Length: 221
Image (cartoon, rainbow, N blue to C red; front, side, top):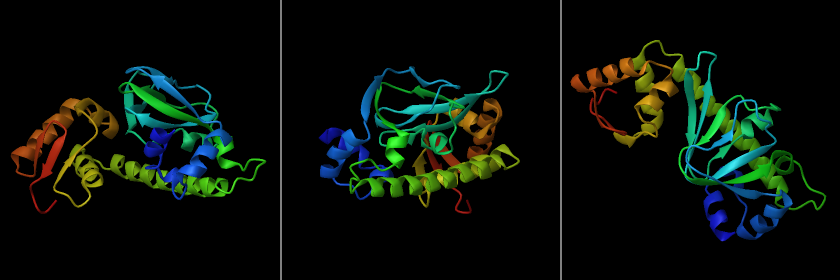
């Protein structure tokens, strides 16, 4: 239990909740752990969503396929991050995307209705949990708006530069969570065209990169 708490405490959902309350809450919301191997499907598009998951180890990718079989990467989640809460909170009964294990991983599964509703015992920590969930959903909305802004850019270069800004903050050197194929999917651009644009930006002295490690060279960016 202590190991699970040490991971979950890094997620805003548990802000202000101590270990003693966490132990009692674990049973109150009927939380369970599940293990998956790399490549396993956790949720298929169309699967019923009645729980939220928190990544305890490994990572997961959330993607969506169109009718032509093209895949768009929506996001990748690492340890202590949640998935499913936005869809469950919006009352969407079935998953619009695919949740897949990127590597061997363990998740904490919690029934959404038990998280957002107080229990008969009126546990003192439950109101804090509900408050944290509302704030978390608001933060996720801001992230979604950020991605919409990236995708609204007309050129691949503009999308790349704005994406880099979201990843690096004020740092010049940073690491992105996607390989080239995944980055192209995330930006909704052709991979070859994107790779060509990255090469141009490097040749123009704007950036340096090696695999997933990037550096902004031009001070104007």
